[in-house]
Image (cartoon, rainbow, N blue to C red; front, side, top):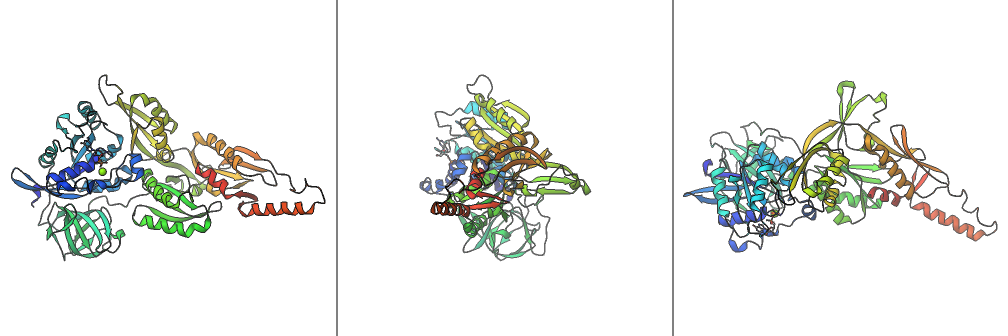
Length: 607
Ligand code: GDP
Ligand code: MG
């Protein structure tokens, strides 16, 4: 297949807008799969509960199909794109393998926020975007209104919109025609040195690592010797093929084609998404911007029963094996014992992992409040340090440390919501330190229940805890939300520590913006006061930022001697009392002089 008959594209869609159904229809129209098979095996793509709740499809499918257009056979490659900004790196890598994208919108639901960031990423890369309105067979479909939304939000010409029903197949042919006519072919050459772009991979028990590649230049055959630009390791190709729609071995891959290769890679970690492969002895310039995925949200995971730690660590490592973007290290805390500190690409990524872990562990683990990586800049040499664990955060007011400034990661957020919830959403954003608020009506004229798109910048730390739940409950489930990385910004942050009897409790350190320090300090001190049992002596419970105490409660002492209230001679009762006291001790954690039941901690941290 010469390049001019190849088209590489992906589908961008909010969950349930019909990405899988459309993919099936295209495969069926091109005879790639049989008609009767549909509905039986391809639609079974089992979605994670959290994907459903959050409205995001993490993975779709990659497949090649043949389509005859004006008497010429064309090779169309549908490339899988994760639908969420947390996977921005993978999204940009798989978009890098395409020249065009189908933007699929449900004509009854309208545009939802979740596809915004992927759309922006596709547009930035200069991909040709084909807008498609799906589900026009539904009585509730409002094609005119939604077409106007597409114009307002994406700036696309309404006359370019293709109206289809992926379910009934109505007008689906027009999609194939548009792919051929509107998306430019890749530009590859057989004579230039071999250059392949690796954009996805998975592990096969028999053949080892299978990598999906986009061949930019050259021809790739079994037996060829290749090398990775990133690792410099060398491999021999044992199989090449295309996804048609399952892995189908072929003789050779030609420039512009998308296919898979198997080589003697033993571990998934050797296949770096975004890597460039070349022929041994004929190096090429790698595709620009190779960088590994970067963790942006961190949380500690601890077993409630410390004896469970080895088992917990094992399951974490096993789950992380299938997801190379998770970082795992050990963390220990005086209050919670031994645990792991995990790093995730974003909040969705964390929720997916958390769900899997909780399914396995039920209520037997505790996950600490998520934190984000802060940048601490020191006056001396302008040294920059990334801090992702509150325990390591310096006291910014301690002049001997010479902290020049602290910066926090921020995001550009978009919320799409029916007009009547607009006020609630503004409130929510303000309460989370939203700035540069702006909004836009998506429906012109007097449409009932018009939709509004609200945009603002928010600190990433403000959306990692409970933001999504708030968004849903305050909009009766109607709001959709998406965000994009917007770099770092200087911020007035401080580390809050909690002291029991003058001793800080490590697991309870928080990094908080100045505007919220007093409220949070008071809340937490009250909570602690409620859950900590009285001791034999008076215990001050304090919240402090640096050395400054900002909230305090006092836990009154128990009577000094538990036996004091008993009448002198009753020896047996006295003994029993002492024994009870000992029993109680066993489940206690000692923090300085204070005894604390483990559950008290879990109670606090769970909220
Ligand atoms: P995805 O999450 O984007 O992959 O969406 P699916 O392809 O799984 O479709 C979600 C639901 O919408 C399924 O129940 C489909 O049967 C249904 N659906 C998809 N396309 C159409 C359509 O054109 N018309 C109607 N009525 N339903 C559709
Ligand atoms: Mg799907």
